Length: 313
Image (cartoon, rainbow, N blue to C red; front, side):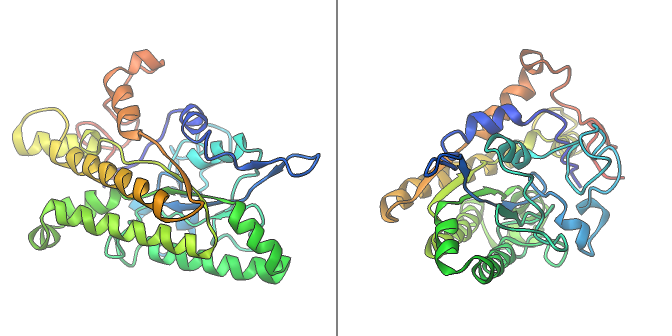
């Protein structure tokens, strides 16, 4: 299984991509006030929720090289050598680190992070081993109830409407949920499967909108076929190096469909605002031209096994 070794500084992409979303800041008072931040996703933004699950080793980040850069005392459950994307966004917005929802006694007045390594938009993806998006949404409802009990209905309504809702999820639906699932591929052609994934994500956005959410941020999918695990798969299947184009095509189809849906929702749902990254091109550029961005390596993972690293042994 792919290790998501996010061993590069996400602060640049965080600030550049989500500058618009961080109208997170409100200047209603002389003291700067920052809106709450709610996060839904997979290993790209999991701050340690999977530490509290009974799951497989591939879905945990409890040992080095995770957490080895010294920002934390050691591994925290983040699939990174240090912080994850949303940690940088929170810092930029002058928020504290947003706690994992499952952390005992976590405080949610600044938001909550529901993300789970290995999770998908579809509940069938890694079912029983992760917190699927549908469950993450149920957890959000629980947080909303908790906030109402603590702050009262009116203040909670204001907090929910001013908050930013960030999504970084979908890769696992295509990697393990589809390309790694012969039964699913037999049942659904690629176009239909992408429609299923996007349909579920659309429902999630509409559900949150119905709860009062108005500001959304999205991290689009990467060129999946260029990840080390898929490069290794192509090498094994064809004896040729390079990206596994079928996987990248799924990621691109997902991104295009999401872009269309967001354009439609912006017109249909009054007051909805969003920012959507182009992570596909952002990462492709760094893979193809690492030296341009100060990196020595753009293809091989830092750690793990396999011809390109990045595989759990």
